[in-house]
Image (cartoon, rainbow, N blue to C red; front, top):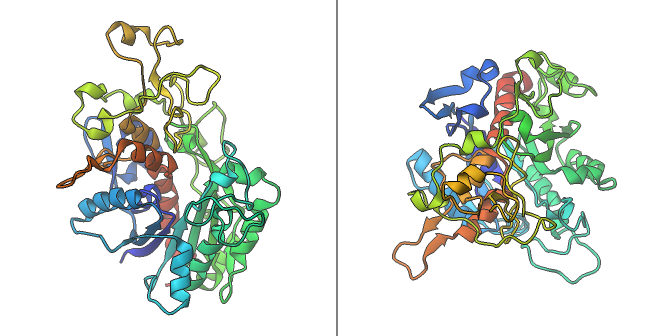
Length: 423
C-alpha cells in the first residue's frame, strides 16, 4: 500500500516527482554501480527510475501556474484527472479554515514535505530571515514588526499542518544560507521539535549539494527531517537519537558523485563517480529553432549586460552548471556567448549557432526534470496564448527542488521504512 504524502509549498512539483519516482532521467545522472536496482527501463539516452512507495494526495502553493503544470504532469502520469489534489492558496488561510471546522487536509498522512519560502534566507536575496518584507501571499508589507504570517515565518504554518496531520515523518527544505543566518537554523529545528500533542525527533539538519547526487548543477540546500517518536520502533528511536547516525540508518542519502575530487568516507566511497558535466544532459538537445518541444523552443531574450552583472556568464559545459534561479530577466546564464562578449564555443559560433541564454528545457534538464514535464503550456480556446508562459515557466523551474535529489532522499527513507516504523 502506498504511503500517503502531503506536499506544501509544492511549486510545480520537483519534490513530488522525486518522491513518487517513475520518471526518466539522463543515463549519466545515475551511478549504476551503487543504484542499479533503481533502473526500471532504459533507452539510448535515458533511464526510467522505479516508482517509490509514496503517493502525493495533497499539494499546495499560492501559484496558479504551478498548479496547472503540476496537474498536467501528474494527471498524465496516473492516467486520471487530479484537479482536486492541488490546492491553490496560502497555507495560512487553509490552516485557519481547518481551525474553523472545514475539512481541508486528508486523513492518514504518512509523510509531509515542504520547501518553505526561501527568498528571505537566500544569500542572493535580501537575507531578512524572519523579518520578511512580504506576507504569506507574497505581497509587500509595510509593518516594521514581522508577524507569524510573514513569508519568513511560513515554516510555522508548515509546523501547524504537521500538528494537524501527525505524519510519521516530515521533510522541510530551504536554502543553504539559512544555516549561516544567526540562530535561525536552531530556532527552526527547535520549533519543529516542539509540536503540540505529539513529540518529534528532529535530527541534525544537513546541507546537501546536488552535484553529489548526479545533478549537473552547483546547488546546495538544507534539509530538516523529523520523526514522530510514538511511531518509531525502540531500536530506531535509539539510533536516530544519537549525535552521529550510521549511514545505513540515516534518512539522508549517501553521495554517489564527487564534485571536487574529494573523498567521502562512506562504505561506498570507492564507487563514487565524478560529477556530471552539464554537457552530458544537454548534448542531445537540438537548437531552439529546430525544436518541437515548446520548452526547448523558448528562451529569455534578455540582452548581454556585461560580465559584472549576475547571469551574464556562459555555461561551462565540462563543469557543473550554475544554480538555476527563479527569475529570468537577465539572470539565466547563457548557453553560448558571441565572440565579442567573450564566448568560448567558437566552433559552435562558426557553425552558425546563435548567442542565446539557456532554454527552459535546458534549465529543466540541469534541474533533472523529465522531458515529459511541460513547462510551457499553450492555451486552448482562449484569447491568451499560454496557460503557462515561458516567463512564468522559468520561475517554476528555478524555484523547484531537483527531482533527482528528492528521489535520493525518498529512496533512502523507503529503504529504512520498515526499520524505522511500527507496523
